[in-house]
Image (cartoon, rainbow, N blue to C red; front, side, top):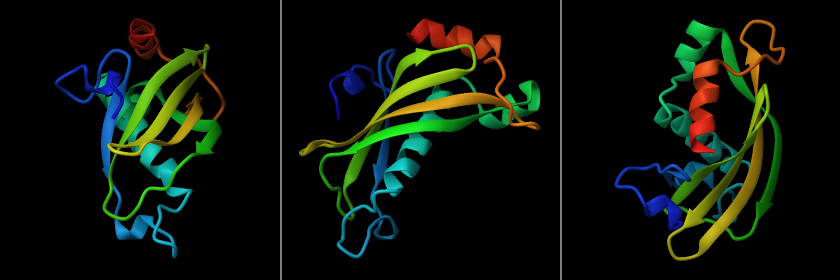
Length: 148
């Protein structure tokens, strides 16, 4: 876990949000290591929990603002493998935001082996019906601006 992730008694800090992920057998490939695509699932879970930690439930954003966040881009680097039963920490750090998008830096970290995977993820705010980009709602934008 990164030092920033441990600054708070909870899971999140102003700079970094950390979410624990246990590696299950179903997450591994025939070589016994985490299948590469599963890191994207781990990161999705952490982003969902990060958003919740900021005070926003995705179901409520859809209901109240008719928006959802969808992944547009992922740049990912695999540095070391994780194995069955490892307890990882997946982090989320705000990088930057535009009118309708947010870029986040994410890692999957092992307590002894350090950063295993790192990624930059761009999510876009879209209308829940048309899936066309829309402006991030003011309450979400204001909260993000406070942590940036």
